[in-house]
Image (cartoon, rainbow over all chains, first blue to last red; front, side, top):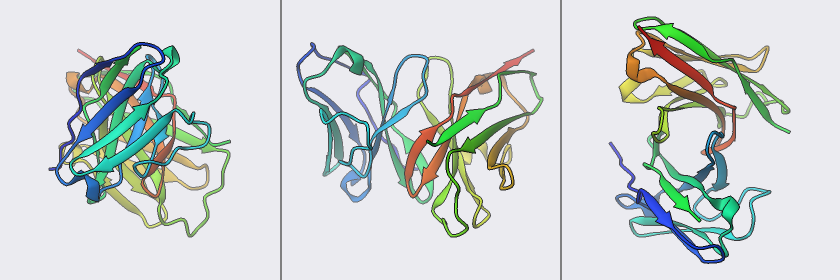
Length: 105
Length: 121
């Protein structure tokens, strides 16, 4: 079965750029979604089809997908961005989540 | 706007079953939205998100994660726009928050508030 790998934690200072990665075999051949989950809250879709932002998601969030790695980038990170971030792909109609990355700001 | 409201928390004995509901509002799925459905995701305490399966009610299609096959059933009631997830033979490590999410194409674009299921002895 397909597997996605994420670094357990990333730490940045306010105003810096946060880079959160998701790795998988030939990942560039798949669309990646990203979810933000704050403590005690439901996940929120922040990126889909690798680099598209849902309405209401700030422009400081951007995404890319190349080779075996998808990247969620948060420019000018704010304290409100502190959360867990999960990537998701679909593999033969089956959803696969990465293990999640805890972003500390 | 789209809203998914889940049923309340449950405490179940080991070996029992639980059925969680997820009522959707704020939109009307059309008969021909073949790429629309509901997915269920769970999160054990302090752990990550785990995909359980999804249902497309318009083509009567379900797909369950291999881990849950034989133990989970996902259904929908079109008359009330409600999705259900039943998990049987509960084990202690089934203690988790269970989320429903609307699926449009491959997007999980709206999530319910979560339902805590606690398995006790």
